[in-house]
Image 1 (spheres, rainbow, N blue to C red):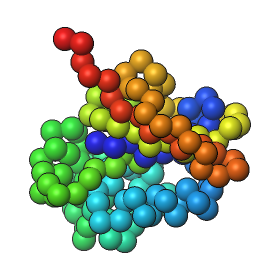
Image 2 (tube, rainbow, N blue to C red):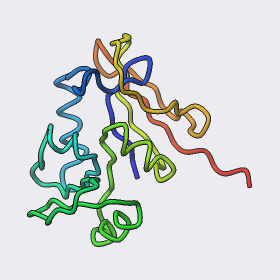
Image 3 (spheres, rainbow, N blue to C red):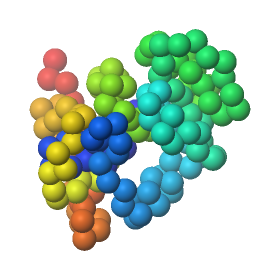
Image 4 (tube, rainbow, N blue to C red):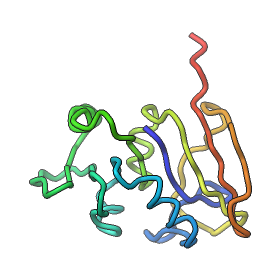
Length: 157
């Protein structure tokens, strides 16, 4: 599973329930990267962005819901694995919010973060990646942001 988020210098992704920033270039790259693939998100994120065209959307929720075209609901990791197994040729992108990111943290194999060089005062954060992931690339993306590519470290067991 690939984490794909915009974060600030404090790993904040939201403030008062809203995404911290919108950068047009980041939105364009999000579309290019995820079209034709699978998105995994929490209920609040789904309510904010809805089902996006040309993607399968998987929504973590405690409530039982009937699937809609290209929208699937799951309550736990086992259900998600069973459902996404129907799409073996597609990449799976975890796109927020923080609750579902924390719940599925151990499933993340790599991360693409757009990091803005400011502190937004955001109140919703993701965990720090440094302990479990290796920074493979950190390059300029826009005047406001850099793109970081992280890969989970090999287990030392």
